[in-house]
Length: 144
Image (cartoon, rainbow, N blue to C red; front, side, top):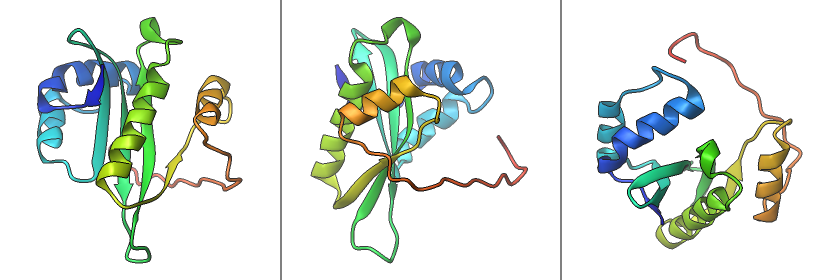
């Protein structure tokens, strides 16, 4: 069942996040606190009989330049044992529906690796297009 994450999911989300992003990126306590007081991100999980198989995160970006939000899918992860069953697509579709019902939205965005052809195929099937923009980053030297 795809649903919005709750603070009760913190421990399992920590495990999935370690699988996806590596160890020591955050703590269970931080995840729990974030889910309790979060106003900028929608976290969606796939729950199969009490076991989380994947998660996605959608950042809600707001600027004074626009009257509406842009939603950016920033994380998409499904445990390898549960892949190729449509879970990522179901979570993204759920998040889109949830965000469209609860926020004035302009568009959804996401970033993925140039070489991640499997993810790109999933995103294209869901209606996402390459917008031909370049993505730049600059590290601060702090944290990750």
